[in-house]
Image (tube, rainbow, N blue to C red; front, side):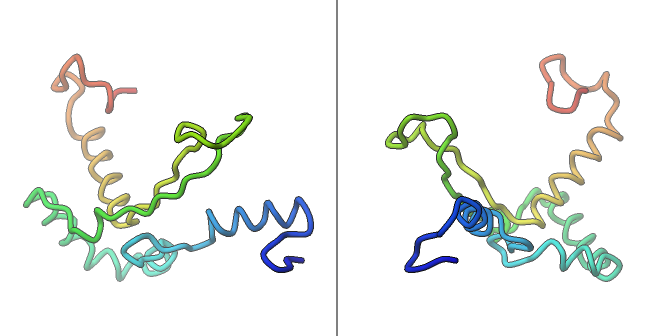
Length: 126
């Protein structure tokens, strides 16, 4: 049991860390919870498809989707955690942006012939 900001066991400490840094259904900076869209996929697709199409057509990503929350956590195996490189970051970005990125990735992988990519291109090659 947590008393005055301290945990009473290792298990509680781990649970507190997980709940703090990886809460279930935590919304991104835009306030949208992924589970909301997953549960309403038939309805959400009807209004998201035109938004995504216009993002691609205009080459524009909404400002709210570009905001990111960053949390720094100590790297394991470090004797101390006093320098910037002693921590790693976890970025929480918009679920809508992540979906757009995945759609674009799928489009590139499925629609653009491998021979059309430059030899120096490695991102969309297995």
